[in-house]
Image 1 (tube, helix red, strand yellow):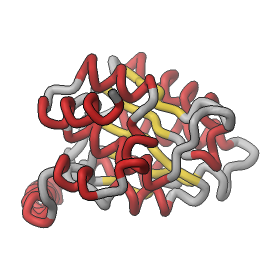
Image 2 (cartoon, rainbow, N blue to C red):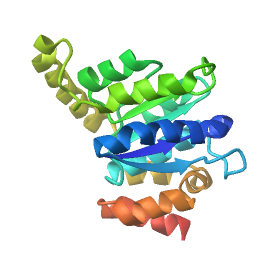
Image 3 (cartoon, rainbow, N blue to C red):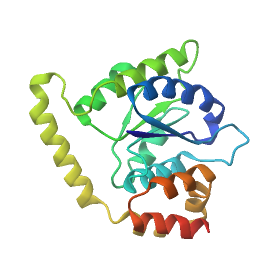
Image 4 (spheres, helix red, strand yellow):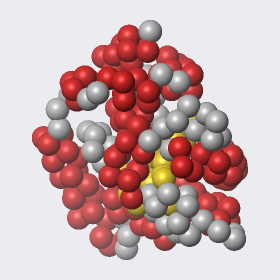
Length: 211
């Protein structure tokens, strides 16, 4: 699985901590981790709304399989990511949240609070969250006897999402293009799209926008 990490501006200083814990857990499990940034407070600023734009582009183009995101409380990032088609983002504070979201809801993104409650031992909590999130396949159900109805509900949710949204490129074209370009016009995004994107319509839109 290819996992992308996206931080917004208020928590850019936490990026190295989050990236380290994510890599330490994900890579021994055979997952690839891509750091989209922000890498530090001096990096080109991203709002949590722009986190949602990047996540939607990466997931819908198949350039990434899963997105780790967040902001001060995690709420804004969760709302922004869930504003787009093809994204099912859960709000995760601690390891049980991560495990249950992955097993019951089987989404493709999480949003975490990187300011609220991020104190002594925060890196330990991150490590355990990523372990519970990534150490088993998603959608296996919890409790196990609830697997079938939970999988059925996930498929229903996917169909509802498909019916509730338009084509992603059409959506992006209707948003302020300066906002969209500000999110996508960064080397980490462009390189990831160029290397991994499978959806040619999304790929062409992004590359033409940032050209």
